[in-house]
Length: 249
Image 1 (cartoon, rainbow, N blue to C red):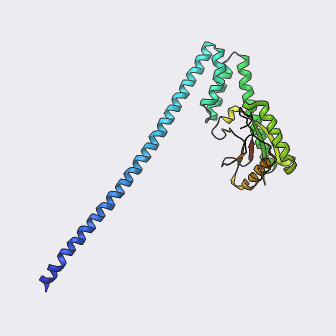
Image 2 (cartoon, helix red, strand yellow; image 1 turned 60 degrees about the horizontal axis):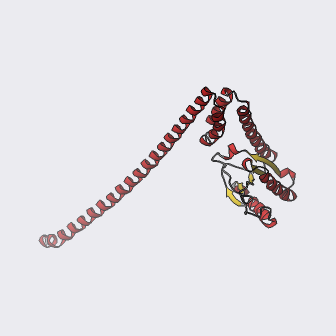
């Protein structure tokens, strides 16, 4: 009886054990391959970020060297160019940007360079003050700020006023305010406004859609429709009215 059991059972048992061991090996191999791929992805992301930061630091050191050289050389032309270059290179670092501006402001002998830097600082202060005041006026509800971009000048101002007047009849003065968005702020990652746009937080989505419907129906901005963009960092509804070659964007 035992011999017959061994004869008919041992073979299948070995086959089952072999199959199980093969399956376990394949699963383990797949898991290791997945982990290896994840490791490679993490390493690649980290290396990319380090290279990006290294590149940014190199650019900042170059900018600093250019700044110091322009002051030592008393080169007013270079100093004027650096005013704009500082905003571009340091768009995502307000602390460093202001430090560079202060060095240029204190080191230059040019009244025009000093005046330009002072004007930029004042414009930024006015923008942030306007948005803060609008927020404080009605903390329990939304507030609409009609923004126009500095770089598009009077044409942008004309369209922004049209938007303001159209919404004034619906929302009233207590809900509305206006602000000029300085180019130095618009270069920053949180802004980068280049089109007619309503920026809103999630709780204001319905009002944002309502405003878009009003402006589209009235054809307040006829050359390009207003687009919607939900953002996390803003609790207000922003209407941007920059312009392109055709008229607006």
